[in-house]
Length: 596
Image 1 (cartoon, rainbow, N blue to C red):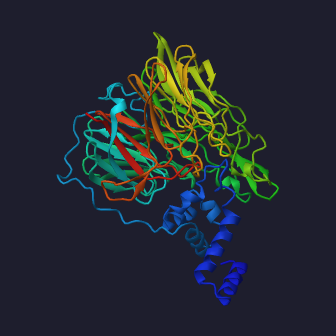
Image 2: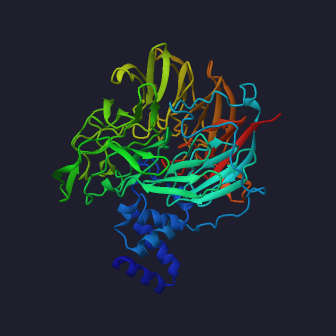
């Protein structure tokens, strides 16, 4: 305990205040000094609001400060102070995993049935389900069939994968679940070392699952039993993580590597920065590395010493947040990169990269925003470690979508936080074919987690979140693939939850499309369906409520953000709750089917 806080505690006890009150005051002071600048409304950081922190187990807050995303801030505190902050923020203790909700019949081997594999349903990441088992006429009759609660969670991760009559998905506390796709009962669980944000990829034989965690570990797990087959770490950088779903093809697993080094970069004593985004190719059977390609080819070198006396280094950044896209015709892998964390500027940040599938060699790079250097110190008035070539933080969070616009004319469609939707030619070194602006863009604006595309149009949801004006932002656009023409725009309804912390009209969540219907989730907690022909609203479900869950975990809905709905076998599955990015916390998976 700091000397001043120890004295305050003694004074409070001496004048009749309880030791608990004293600790509360100490926790508040520590939080205000080290944490509050990011965890407040209208902050442009990705940090969760106090309401979300209050729902986190104390153990999870301590873990975040010691080994997780906040460990750079936590390093300024001793173990007792980290616990004191956690006890000030939350009264929740980690829940013991419920043993209810398990399938009575045990766990038969997955076989047959409808599928949604990984992030984008196909190698091209279209997020288009051509055989949903659901028609546009049935969509208005969709009803909630069951709810599943995630323990120890304030945000929902791990967009569901559907295969062999099962759902496979990860969660914030690192538990990976195998659920019955119809009933939601649990076949098995597997506990990873850290949060599993990625969607799960499954092989064609329905034998093995592949996913990553936020400590940059990749796993292969038996699909029938949940038994670990192998686990490998693909990046030793302390802030490396995997957020995009690994892509599986022909016995190889292609893993995108991102990081949160922007966060410790906010500390002027941190030597910023040294991480470089990468793609790692692994042998799917053994986990052995075949090749690793860094998005920034040259390793970082010492650059300047900041005014706080800390040695800076670079270039750094170009995290790859999203799932790779595979082009079998060109035998290429496409990835979209993030911003730079430090100087000097390079042409590989905020860019689309094409890599050779066999060797990992760079074929071409198409940068969309030059000189976009940014880390959390850019929010600090002292700006000791903010890059001299500072940009607006307009990186790519979404996967490129590969589509054929006309015979012999293929396009990569990519949404950016700038508010731009880009169409580039993969057969002409990424030449820009058309660009369409759908919003003003910004750090948490523009297109966040990505569009979806059928044969004719690409459907892009707009964030443009404004914490000071929560009714602003949002909306869904249909853009003609061949020309970039805007076909229609569906304006966002006024959020019914206005006034509730974290409620906004922004639509950050990835879009999903089936024949004649497009689905888009909102930060206001609503999942909405629109007709693809003209954007007419077909269905609207408000997830902001508490649920009786089939596994007995107390659960509620919140903002829809990091994952989109998956559709197969006549059912729709969506995660609700996102206590980060200023959103409303929640911890529930919802399953819908039409009422017959």
